[in-house]
Length: 431
Image 1: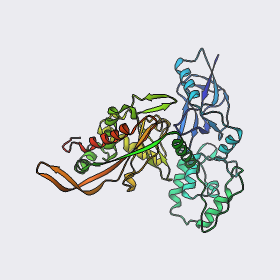
Image 2: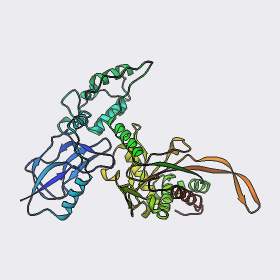
Image 3: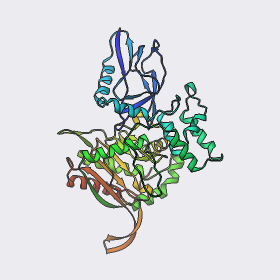
């Protein structure tokens, strides 16, 4: 009998560990190829881990509720005969992508993020929803869960949040007091004292990961940002004319985002260096164009779902994909493979009323583009009869890129090319 080591999979470029929610199989159970063995959770998604081989589950190396680094062996299966080359490759890739072993103190700190004052386990997603909604540990303890062993699931807490809105609420001071009393924190240096009328809010785990990744990106890449202003009047008028027809034909809302992504894909073909990453002194040119779209979550954090092979989709396909990912991102229902593999990212800061922004590069990518709010402005228009002043719909594009491998000429030309494609949009285009 050959042995196969089941590895904690990589759940995204910024995720280094996951929590085991539930073992779906126990030691001695037979497992089929692609059959789910366990459920895992991060602050972003819950997911099942399937087995790439068939065999008998001989050893479980972690208990439910434990936090496991990516690339670590979580279980061992005994298989009849050898392990397929595909399974071996998958296991090797998982190991290569795994972070280095964390010190014991750091592992303890990670585990403390999902522990509480009782023996009851709560997943990171449930805890994040509770923090965002101001639900104290006392309220959580009183909830009856429908999960295994009475565990509170995401469905349970969302249903409670909805019913809670129609019930009398405890005062803010009582909620803060309850939350502070129920927290169990890792031993740290003596707390600082602050003067004035303040409130101290502890960062949730996802926010800490975002903070660490932003600092890492700034320390890794030499950020430079170029700006252009684009006349998107044709797009605005065309969308206004077509959005009802689009809704009737395809049952989808037509936003500006798929139009922007379409232009970005065209420009990436013109400037392939922008669709790359840097590994030491090697530049890795990406042949696939996978566009990440930054999406805001209800708790204020950001997540970046990825549209794989976006350049292969027409406008209808892009619109469907954008709408689907945006909705499920807000609901916390994205799958693990939908937040990884991006080669270039777009952030639509215009949805927040911002005219422009200087986005931070999402490692290991080398560039990111921000689209600003569309504003009506008086603009000089060149005509055969001479210059004239007209009211046009204008938008700023901000392109941040890694100056280690992308010079100003390429970085600036790329964003100018995106603007050109937007300005050349055919206002007579059919859908």
